[in-house]
Amino acid sequence: MASGPSKNVTNNSIDGEEEYSEFCENFTFSGNEQCFICNGYYGPNFSEPICGVCHSFVFHNDDEIEIENHNLTKFSDDNEEDSGNEEPNNQQEFDDNSEVDNVNINFMNRRLNVDPPRDVGEFLDLLSRPRQNDIIQNEIVQTLPVEILLKIFSYLDDISLWTCSEVCKKWKTILERNIPQAFWKRHLKERFPLFQQITQVTNWMEMYCSLMKSCFCRICLVHMANKTPIHQGGVNHLRARRLRSDIRSIAQEGSAGAIDAVPLDEQETHWQACIIGPKDSAYEGGKFLLYIRFPYNYPMTPPYCRFLTKIIHPNVSRHGDLGIDIIQHNWSISITISKLLLSVQSLLTDPFTDICMEPAIGKLYENENEKFNALARSWTWKYAMTELFPNPNIFSNSLK
Image 1 (cartoon, rainbow, N blue to C red):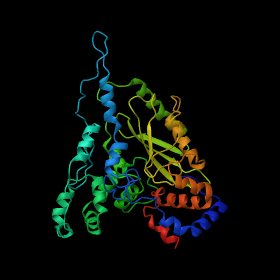
Image 2 (cartoon, helix red, strand yellow):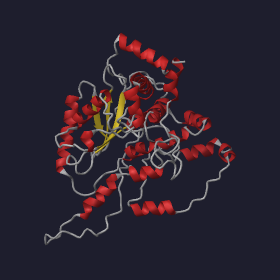
Image 3 (cartoon, one colour):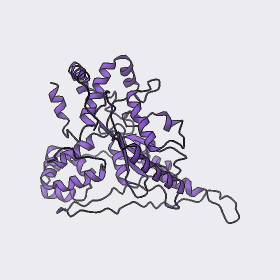
Image 4 (tube, rainbow, N blue to C red):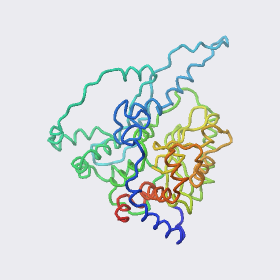
């Protein structure tokens, strides 16, 4: 973690938090009750920044499209280019091989084998199908015996179980009493390999839930957990060499603890990275996780980079998307992952407000800087310091 701030900065931070404590505690993005892309046209967003339909359209898994595009361009024996009309292979393999620790529990480690629609036609077909309203009386769910609920829960993976724990206090209590701590500890270290156990953890379920709640989007967490391979054919040797070089550069340039990154799969397609909040800034002391996905043509094309940890910043959307020029328009093959992470870290202290991912946050930064710093600092304490404080409610209680 970053070193502690000076006394003057600390005193100013405390004064700012006391003055804007009510604003920071009640802050929400405008229109947060609906999807900020379709404004609720396609359905509810269930407290997520984007509804499921818009996420499938705008932030769908581009890996499968890359497979199709790569298979379209082939050359025949007479050196004539294929017309590209052959249909790609629709079979998608998932990495289901995962080690299961010796935990005395019936809950197995199952990956989410979700096969999304592969083209726009299938998306539109799903949207055009009529759906009847789900009319389920609450008494039916409430009267289910604990044995039945446990049987149902036994078929769910860890992310689905965490979602169930957010439904009601009864389900959360059942999960707390019947799932051992070793289950949550194992999956926490699998989902968040950069997690560092700084203090003694007595409740791993609480720590797991706190890390999940600190992330912007649940669907992105599912995508990261799936670790979908991007290509079923040959290996891009340029990409493989470059990724190995990136791993070495991370080990060298990230030795100071300011940045770090690790691959999540054998193909080194899906990575999880972290940056430490710069000193003497509103993000000081925070550990911000990022999700990076490398396309098949990397490094000729830039990686997809997105914040996992919630953060208040003019150049970061409420979905975690980064508005940084080097990956949007000025990508260069000479930019390594360590340089990318250092650029993101420097962006925290020097936002570009001419073009903002969140215009309201940009105006707050320009016109009411102290108020912005108080809000950014409160979110850092709540969501980016989970390793020290798993329960974010202690901050709201301390400000009252």
